[in-house]
Picture (cartoon, helix red, strand yellow):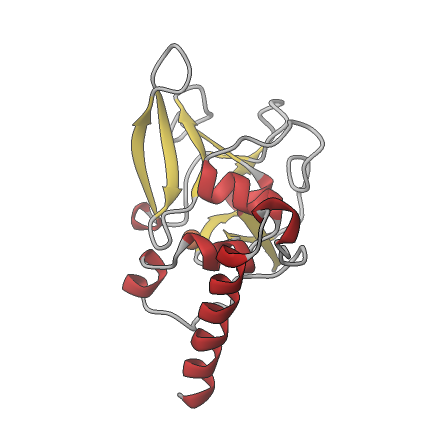
Length: 174
Ligand code: FE
């Protein structure tokens, strides 16, 4: 418990220093790639209350841009679009298990694509009007990190394509 409190305090101090450091973009130290978000250290409510400053210390720049700013990574050059390795794909923000390799398929879009999440309650959706036409945005139900979008051109049995950014995922081999 003490260690947990100290970590929180340390992160608050780091976040505070980040706010004081001018200019922000040049002074910020981003997390190293591959960090899984320290699963199990927060309750669901605490995950939703993580501040923007703390996300900046927990995530890599690319993870932050996708998960917290709804950026879309480039197709075909991302980590998991072509992977067929058996295992589970977790949220890169809070480590919640989101997708299984069993429901991954090659959509030829250049992004990891799944026809179903591991359970309907691990993701949430909202309508996104960033492009001319409305799209269904999909995010992690626990930390509300942006994952990608859902389209209705997927394979059976759902007919859905969960088009997910690799940067929003962390892969756990089976
Ligand atoms: Fe999450």
